[in-house]
Amino acid sequence: QVQLVESGGGLVQAGGSLRLSCAASRSIFSANIMGWYRQVPGKQRELVARISIGGSTVYADSVKGRFSISRDNAKNTVYLQMNSLRPEDTAVYFCNTWPSRAAYWGQGTQVTVSS
Image (cartoon, rainbow, N blue to C red; front, side, top):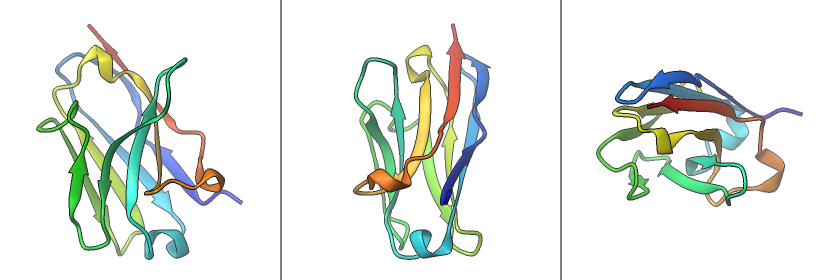
């Protein structure tokens, strides 16, 4: 049963922007801190940003000032607005709760930033 579905990835030039979306089941979304994670082949998955039910946010140092996480509690959706993208942001992006739960990992969405 798919409970988290990511979308919005793509190919963009350095300096460009993308907005990722993650649709979640209500049971997951309404009761959890939500996070965006990313993974590059050969490296561990890392937390990019997280947002509490009340809207408090935390960002990885590498994306502070460039990325913005938000959530729409009416739509059970969490977003990641990514601006000033860099080639090193290239990764597969996933959403999950924070802390993450193994059962919730989806397919992710690929973000590729060309230089």
